[in-house]
Amino acid sequence: MKTLTIIITIFSFLLLSASTFAQFDIEKKIKKKLEKEIDKDIDKGYEEGKEVITNGDDQDKGENDKDEKDKKTPVVDNTDNDQDVDKSPGQVTGDDDSKKELKIWSKYDFVAGEKVIFEDDLSGEESGEFPSRWDLLSGSAEVASLGSENVIHLTHNNSIVLPLLDKQDFLPEVFTIEFDLFFEEDGATRSDIYKIRFYEGTNNSATVDGKKITPIEIRWNDVKLGQFGGKTTAYTEEKKNWHPKWKHIAIAFNKRSLKLYMDEERLLNIPNLGFKPKMFSIGGHFDERYIKMSSIKNIRVNEGGKKLYDRIMEEGKFVTRGILFEVNKSIINSESMGTINEIVKLMNKHPDLNFRIEGHTDSDGEDAFNQKLSEDRAAAVKVMLVKLGVDPLRLESKGWGEGKPVGENSTPEGKANNRRVEFVKI
Image (cartoon, rainbow, N blue to C red):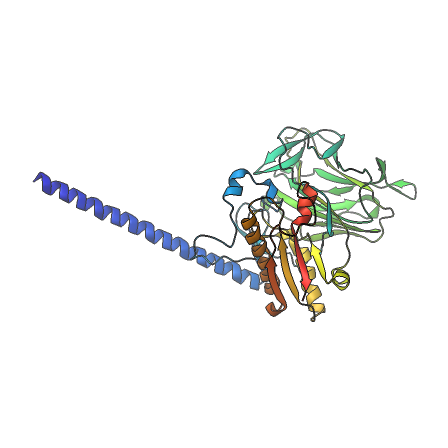
């Protein structure tokens, strides 16, 4: 009888285990099916001029900012172990914490300069310390953690920081500047302002006709530059829909003209600034009665702005550092769409142009991983161009990994210049 009881107990346990495993297997299949449907919706969104915007906290700061664990177990977007999920390369990211459908940055026409002359992703910096690659003009600032990233936290009202370079008058006659600004949710502090100041020389404020130029003022929903016009409204979001978020700022200066973008929107277009900026600073201005997290991250200054077609005619190719990806992935960041849109326009205007898209990385990480990463990124750019209407027969893709550096891998700027996408005429 005891033996029979044991047999029945074992049999019952096996039935229960089988049922449990069967349920687990079913749930796994359902999950895979749902993932397939999600990816189908992503592809459909591309065709309708929309993209899925995923978490952008890991915007391309370069492979060097990952810790040792990430380097040992890298994750590439389109090499998922689950073969049943059809990943879609060329996916665009933004800055929301959850997946969200937004319109593609179709109107964005900002193109970053060809060469990086200053880059700071604050990797390796210690929280609470002053950022090592910056100088302080007023107030106080320190490195802090926001989410999973290091940021420059402006801790007091009227805090102003200035990039620290080998030469003080560091801006060339053609340059681009990009950075991200954080805006908080608290309605009482929503009038806070970031200010961008340009200088004609070392610590000298710019003047036009003897009048001092006021800074560019950036609020969460508008931008203005004193004597060059009034407020330009960018957003009309209702307060109930407001959420704290990062805003991507891009500035392009070409000998005398200046343009400024907040995310996709171009908010300033000044045909003649009246002087040539030699330096710039970023400041935060707010009511100190409230707890603040005025923060800056992903600061990059590039030199040059020659038109893509002119570069092709001179060199048979053009190099872009304006196509950025998530760290260690082939997912394209939203701010890359300015460069990508310009390439689409170029190829539509010149139907005789065909390109081999070549991906390059810096030397951080394993050689084999960087090789695969460069191939995946080049392929992702090709997919994006095809989805925007370019004939796939006009495009090839190839990855070179870290094998063709153009700068030293010992500096942030050298690594940023090595991380690039080249379009070679074929």
